[in-house]
Length: 201
Image (cartoon, rainbow, N blue to C red; front, side, top):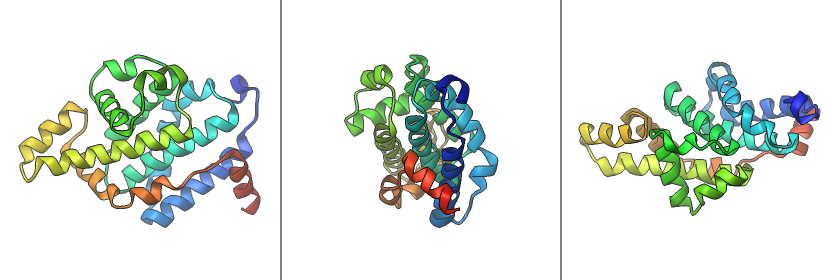
């Protein structure tokens, strides 16, 4: 990223890591995500971030990591989190297979529609921190709604989930997160606030 952006954002990223750790500790009292999966998520976003400025890439990544870290912290599987990060990275980079290969791509299309976001605009223009926040909030709401609509039938829960490349337990994790999704939505980080965070450390 430093090479392609021609901009060293190491200091800001140190601040971002600290802010993410503090956020996850405060919200869920666990930072397992940071050790177990955050680096894989970052790898999925590299192509998209390469096409952004350093500042925009940092605030975009923070939104993705914040939401996926929240999902993981309330019980969503590694497989679902990595699948979502892959689709989000491709969508933000303008890669059409983000929405043409089924699974999580279907989920992103439905959630974008629910949030009033135009999927072709997102592919053409990429994602920024605001649209990323709106999209991921909608993904959580949509998954929770699927679980609730399935009722007590485990067969229907699994059938709904399979359309979107996840499992019923992943949908249940979204229900867990939906209870605090407003607080998650309101949390954000700019490049300057990441630097401030590093300085205060």
